[in-house]
Image 1 (spheres, rainbow over the protein chains, first blue to last red):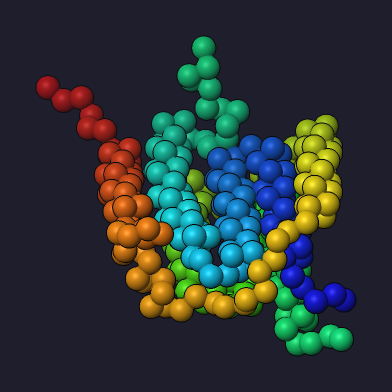
Image 2 (cartoon, rainbow over the protein chains, first blue to last red):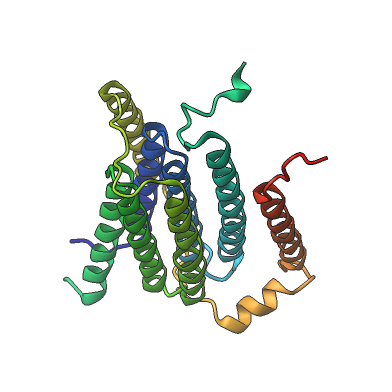
Length: 104
Length: 172
């Protein structure tokens, strides 16, 4: 076992990002797709914090980017869930295959 | 030499990645939400391990306490109990896994080839530092984004209310 450092954290965040992408590509339920997006956003946050700690420890820019990303992610999740619940009311389903009214 | 901190790091990494993987692959949506919860807790643990305690606390309060609870409520509102998600076509799964694996391999090759310019001064930010920077209007201060975020949250709140309003039945 090696002493964990920047490369280990970059490995975790890249793996988490692509796990999120896999979920986004395979899932067809809107709530599970939203969960995949949360995983992707978290991997980005982890990257910002790791770079801030190991490359520019004297500055706080990565930390603030992470804070603002968390705030925006919270707003995004709230709006997405409002849309999902409204879609469920009108279509009785939150599957993306059934929500194709705007397609034609 | 194996220290306690190393072991804790690997445990947290394993927790995060395993729960993330289970969260995108399980067919029961409620379990997916719970696995997502543990994955987010693992990431908060990594922030603690990096000694960014403030971000770890924010992660736990906002993600674990806010977003996952919101997701669980919306699952209660939109899913029938005990119903599994439909099976996916194997072709889609295979091609997604292939694309994801290629992307991951490409990214890791690039990362390991790159020489980073490490700064060995391992100082972790103090709380007063964070507070002063966040509300400072000088160079390196984040007062303007802070205010913009507050406007964004207000807009999101109003947007949620407008979207979720039950439209009145047409009455005459």
